[in-house]
Figure 1: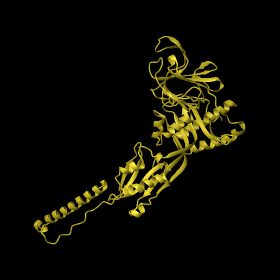
Figure 2: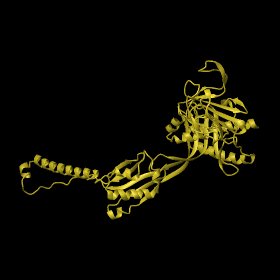
Figure 3: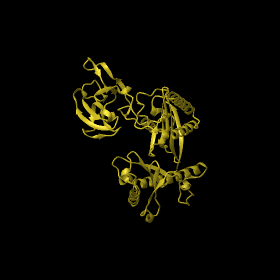
Figure 4: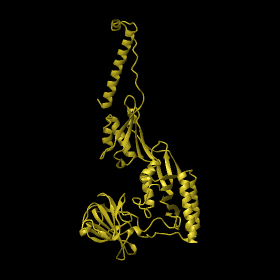
Length: 440
């Protein structure tokens, strides 16, 4: 007997005995004769046991390495149901995309008979299998993948920075996914691990999809973004370039995408030592130039290439420990030192933002950190003070259309009736006007 069958038979038997005993005792308490009730005379009317008809919803966790069959086997279904049900799921979706940590949802009747199986394939789709009572129909089970009803609106999301960008966006009731996308959008102007300060304000104008099943919203393209970093406005507006491709431009018509990223680290780190011509070496205890920037970060923190280029060296190099060196356009080179692990080889072509290794403590160091250096035409430069060039600039013939687009996007942010939005947009417009007057 299967687990559901054992549970069901035990529950029904207990209910029947309890109902009978209750009826006998109630009658005896009202003056009835217990011996008479237990005699061989006509049986008294005994109410049938009350069965709760509320459907039972059971989560079937997906474990690492599971197949549809192993997931369903843990539900202890009848073999005549389990086989057709597994086939229906396999025919409807690519089961290789079943995500460990998710669950299938099995709905049973109050009598523990399976009636429906569901699985949310992605944000927008759910798989559903209706399980009939008839065994003949069960043999031809079919799974259907339905689109989850949703609505899309372009909305302004504004907030004040407190502690971190992640926490601030979460406090605004939005997904931390937006924090990552915003950091990526301004990655060429802001190092979100060192530059932001409490009290900074920001706004995003983003496509937001809300679902009728009340799951977490998802987000489409960001139309505009404004970040007020201690009084300095950074902005980005989505606009088509001369070839019709969507590109983010700042208010001056320059693309937000720079030739170099502002940080070689993908996640939070502080600068423990800056560029210096005369620094006391922490190990050697002598004064010597430090021609790079030290980022203090735990061992294993991902390191990314600040720009596209070619790997010219990847290996051990004395006091530098594990070193990766990249050659970029226009005479630039970048160095990534003391790595715990290198993920690239000499001669390999690298894209901007590609992970090339992990922070470590190899070579002459006192603790885990990344010593990052940049050189142009043989001369080391202070990366923090480097004026990084943009990749593209709008031609003069496109600026009038861009300004109109920018005005419309700012109005949509301000029309969100957000106090932060009003303030941020007002400051952004003031800075644009000041820049325009300075140019004239």
